[in-house]
Image (cartoon, rainbow, N blue to C red; front, side, top):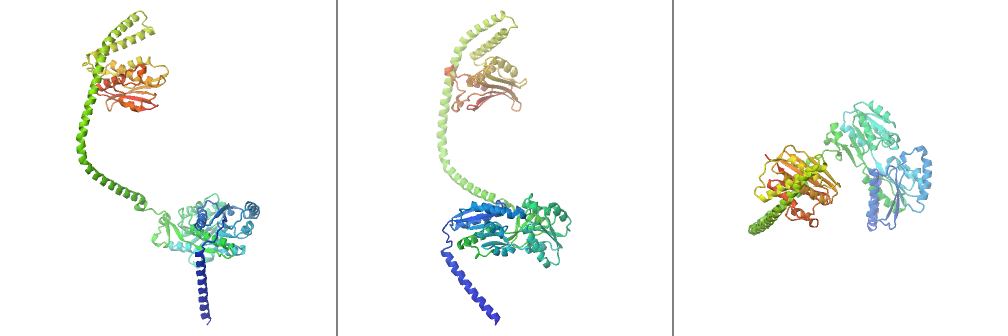
Length: 623
């Protein structure tokens, strides 16, 4: 009879509970967030506010309030309680109470959310006596503290050490010793004590406990462990380990023992730990966000019970699994393996997808081009004939124009050759008479001698111009000596305001040029360069031999204004000049081009506006 009554009572309770849930669901559907005013939340970080899980919780809370379109003022304070000496906490919190009271005097805080359970109880109430509290990641053993504190709720960290013990035993069935490493932090002591309470359920295993705050002592004790041991590291945070990061502190155990190490947290997995339990911060954050809305709606946390958030998954490190020869097929179904090498397709999935898209795209383009080319093929045949006719007509006109220019130049050259020959003869005679009247050791004697040499070159040049047909019949000439002589003559014509550098690195190579032509080349290029620099700048002449191409390369470089882009193609045309106002005739570069072209040489021009010009002459070496 009693059993029957109990069953009926349970059924009645279930019906009543179901009705209440339906009514509340209907009301919530009609008005899912009755909050219309702006809400103020103070978030207290008891660790660094930059921790990954800490940021995730904050983002989840703000995201949930935003999705419900609840206006939110979000404040944050960083206490970092665990770093403070417990003996000084009361004094520090008395100061903080005065500080926060003044700081938030004109702000009505609706809810305080704490990143963990560090200030559960009197510490939290001392700071904010009348404000509801919501704690994240609170330990299961602190539920009574929440009730005693009053007006407080939490997301409960329902982490069960049995899970990790069972996994360790399954993966290492022959190991007989289990070592529990802990420090003196509250969290670590709690889980270490929890394991002591359940070790009786594992009679075939011997449990060894290491608890210390000193790293050197920890290392010494770890080295004494039997090789037939796996380790569960429950250490979480302790002031002596502050010099090490969270991940580094975890890896000390493995680095010292080289034994399988397991953790109650997923953070150290990937740094010498085989496996660790994951408490998803997204889960805790979203749960805390829902609880926060309920507390603010009710104005109190007394009727909002704590919510258990169980461990979601266990993370395993592929490198550690490989090291200890643990096959993946014996892992729990929900296991997550990290650091696992990706297959070729997984590693290059995005690249392969991009390649596929590109191949398809270009295939389409190529197909379209082929069709277009076939359509244009007939048109091209018709146009080709028309273009050929037009090209021939243009070529004929260009040749005719060039022939007229050459004819005019020839007539002009023959006209002035006769007149110049007489003038130069008179100058030569006077020069020689003057040499006879002065000492051969005089500076003026050398100058007159150079004048006479230059006059003889000019007379030879005029004679060749007059003969025309015989101008290109020459004997191989050593270029080095001829260049040095031309540079010697030219040096006296260069203003002192121009820095002149001359470098001649050829040996006894010969070219099919005579001294007069070499002098014309040097004279025309260098004078043009000096004029381009307005008498100020740097002129460099470099001569070197390219044995591979069997050529002499003469480079003439200036730091002048450069040649305008639309003039570059015309600079070798006869009579083209930009210096008519300075007496320019436009024949200098034309003559240089003809001389180089007559021996199958080549001229290139490197030009930069406002940065100078470089003429490079490639002269074939005579056999």
